[in-house]
Length: 176
Image 1: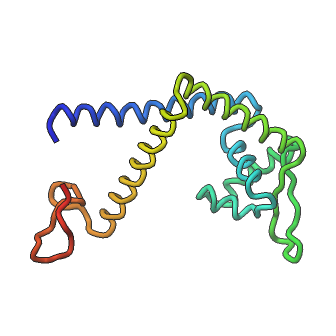
Image 2: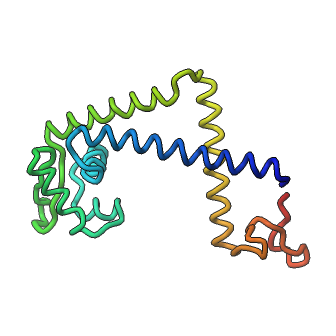
Image 3: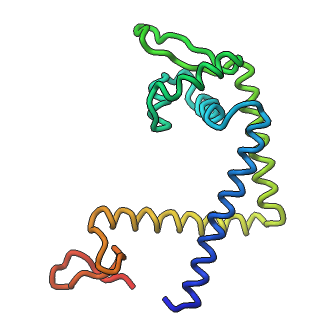
């Protein structure tokens, strides 16, 4: 890749990161105004999709220990946003569900997310949004393929796992 294209790639990757950070910062600011912390909000949104989830399931979903979510669960329960019940047949397991107030917070959150997303795409046509979606999907696929090749083959000397191995060993074709 020549220097000009390399500069374009660097700028594009930087912009992708900037957009992600700006979007995340706005969302987190709005979530704070709902009166819950980020982790608590993530729990509420998870429970909106997985009603009755066990506390240990929540910990697995967020890749943390059960004790790490306990504090947030207690605060959400005290705020009247979730309720804990024992799993029928296994009193050791706490199942979590949203209360009516918790479901209302989910709806407010979804409206908030929609508003931020609409602001982000203001001035774009549906066709332009479709193209962006296609491009981002391709980027995601490319990264997944690259990561899989890194795991499978390890990086070559240049650090590019997509590079060619010798045709004699027949294990990988050159990609240009």
